Length: 451
Image (tube, rainbow, N blue to C red; front, side, top):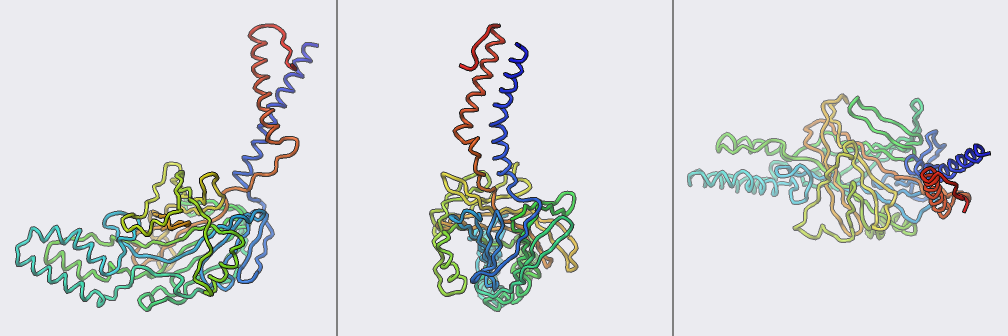
């Protein structure tokens, strides 16, 4: 009889211990892997001005005519928060001082000359004889007046100022991996200074309907979950302003002994992250079709940049004294950077992430090298301006892979048998039983566990 009682006690204890653990395991599983690894039978459809993908987890919209590279997505069963990502354009910037983008260091003609004079020429001419100093100052003045003659382009190429061509979604299956492929290609530019960019900037998209692992080589790979949208941001044949003033830089070195490090420049992809209400979708359509310049009011309060909460309510771009902040990865973020839509009381589920390396390819598509990718960001009044920063890559092709998606599914409804209140009771009961059993062993006498 004593053995049976002990067996029953052990069984009850094990059951009580397993219930909360099982429930919590189910919740953790939903958090870590919400996607259906077997895939979803997804078919895109056109609704009004949008292409629409709808899965049990995520609903994704993008322009059906490819007017602009804009993406909106939300939980299929919860449209109270719509996440918005806009590709705004690319910016050539100088890296004489820092490796990441800050707007004070745009690589247009006047600012290039200002930085050269402040950083390299100014300190050097202070040590020169007056005749040589006057000569180089005159050369600098001539250079500033004739900078347009070098064919320099503006630093910023706005994507909305040109036109895009959309290659419609097509299903692709490779082994056990399935996705829908579609591409945005820049077809025309807002000014002739950027004619070289026409047809050479592309956003190649893959909307995965199964989980997948993309293996580049033994040191470079990444995983993608079903319901996530992977981009290949591609730039070919970029014409660098710093290269166009190369004769002047060589003159500085040969005649005046002023050595300017080559290729201290980069290209930043400007992305806006915002969050709107589903009721504002019509207004977003008007903006897409250029019927209105008023953007839907963003509800975004902040972002989780890595492990740090960053509020975006204030428009810090209006403050000329405040630079963009660099995204410094922690050890835990060595393989991937992630920025999540967030507010103080709760982390939202939408995210954008990217691997911290980009591929540099030759004209045949063969790998030349990998380049490290940095990032910077700044609050811009209810939305976040994010800049993905690529070092100088010459006349090669740059290819980088950001991803958007949802961090986890909403927690599955807890069965009536295991409600939140019951979990608390079970955990408390488990602790009480453990203490009681320990007391029995310690005191060597019978204690009424039921009571």
